[in-house]
Image (cartoon, rainbow, N blue to C red; front, side, top):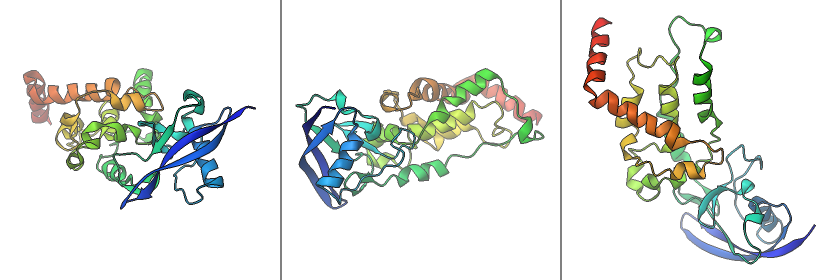
Length: 256
C-alpha cells in the first residue's frame, strides 16, 4: 500500500469566529476525507470537532464543504484530488457553526415539523393500502433521502439570504411536500389541506428558481428539481391560476 503526505486546511473555531489551520497528514490508498480527519484527531488535533456516524454514506452526519463543494466526507475519496493539491475542509456555510466542522442544523428539524404528515384515507385499514407500481416507484426515489442537508446547504435562497429562512423550507422539505402531494392514498384534500397551495403559501415554493444546485450535491442521486420541485410548481400554478382547475375545485366543493 502506497502512502503520501497531503496538505490539509481545516477550519477551526466556534460561533465567535475562527480560521483555517494547516496540517501535513499521511494519506493511504483507498482512504476518504473522513479517514484523514480521524487521523488528524488521533495524531495532531485531538480536540477537532466533527460529526459522523455510519461512515457508509447512509446517515448523512458528516456533511461538510471540501474544496468549496458540499459533500459527505465519508464518500469523498482522496483519489479525486491530486497529491499536490491542498484539500480544504470547512463546515457547511448555511448553518451556524457550533465548533470546528460541526454546525447547528436545527433549522431543518423546525422545517420538518411544519410539514403536515400523511393523512390516511378514510375507511381503509393500513394493511389494505393498494397503489399502482408506478406510484410506488415515483415516491420511492424521494424516500432515499438520508437528510444530510447538503441540498439545504447549497440552496442559495437560504445560503446567501439568511432573511429567507423563516419563509422558505428549502428543497429537502419541499420535496417532502411534493411526495405527499403526489401520493395517491394521501387524503389531505378531503381533510381540507391543499398541499400544493400550502407549498406556495407556507413553505416558500415560489422562492425556488430551479437552478438544480440541490440535485447536483445529493449523494443519493435524487432528482430533486426535475421530479419533485418542478412538478410541484406546476400543480401549484394550475390550482391557483388555471380557470378550469379553479372551477372544478369549486364544483367539487359544492357537491360535498
